[in-house]
Image (cartoon, rainbow, N blue to C red; front, side, top):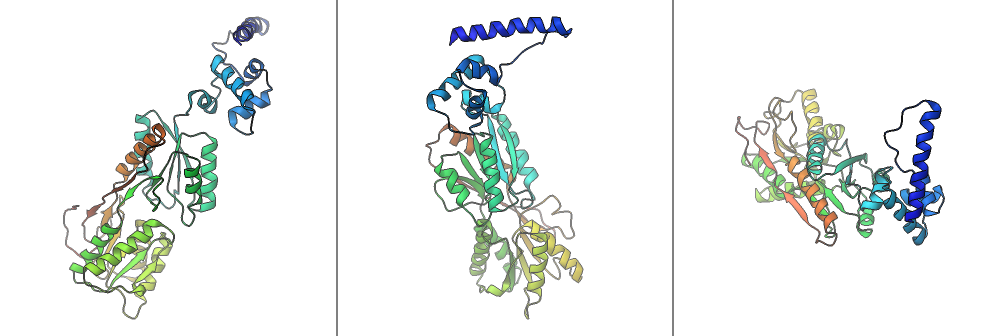
Amino acid sequence: MDGKVDRLLRGRKRLRKRLPERIGMPQPRSSRPTQRDIAELAGVSITTVSHVVNGTRAVAEDTKAAVLRAIETTGYTGDAIARSLVTGGTRSIGMAISLVANPYFATLMQAIEREASTHGYTVLLADTHDTADTERDTVRALRSRRVDGLLITPAPGDGSVIGELVSLDVPTVLIDRLTTRGDVDQVGTENIQATSALTAHLATLGHWRIGMISGAPGLSTSEERVLGYRLGLGRSGLTWSADLVACGNSSHEGGALAVSQLLALPEPPTALVVGNDSMMVGVLHEARRRGLKIGQDLPVVVYDDVEWADLVDPPLTTMAQPIEEIGRQAVRLLLARINDPSRKAETVRLPPTLRHRESCGCPAVHSHQ
């Protein structure tokens, strides 16, 4: 093998010396080994080298070993995939998330990129559009790039992608929408006690018919926040009524339709708990259309906090998720999994913070936890 390397490199140096003289070009500053060089050195075809580098077809183990030895010997680094074959990793993380379903995405992504960069990793992003089929395709596309691990906000209605990743021992961390699985790392915000506290707060203000606008079906966050709403009612001595819960499908339009449905009841709610800030936008639009004053005609609290929450009139009482800390914890969990694949799976629930403002009907107060 060493003799072939020497002959290959000497021949290429002689060729590089002759070419500039003949065509009047300056001497190239460098010349990286190519797949053709790898094929010649390993005694295989260029197609075989391509299959080994890209993982597009099964190759006999001895042939694959010869190609990998050639890659390591020549220092071939034609792309990140080739480097990963030699080094065992691409120093990259894949992130599969729905951009539409996560209004706080920019903050989360910045936190993840900062933390990953601190450890020498880059982040590759893929949009799942919040559908199971697209999620499956994007996860496979990221895996084809040989990322060292995956961060995923699971799409509703299908856990098969997570099951597949776990069975293949792909380092994976779920973000925000957590599952009851005990075999995968997860990080998100506590939902049940936090929504219970929002509901109980409205009850202390004298409301006994409190409505709930819930998120999309099939999401763990939606289910947990409805459970927290019911818990808050019970703790306040109030009765649960299915009529007072309307699904807003985690969207602006859904939020507007849900509040219309609740206000059309013979005995409508006197206050609302809204499951996320996307639906809150719909509530604000519908309240304005009806000429209702939030906080006075319709007291409202919402799980999630956005930049404009304290800019609307009145400012919104919210339960703010620690988005930046979620991003940091997700990266740390993933790197821990990459470095120690056999470690016990861990679920991290971070406490949200109550931003107590005026949409609940209270006078202006300072935010507190």
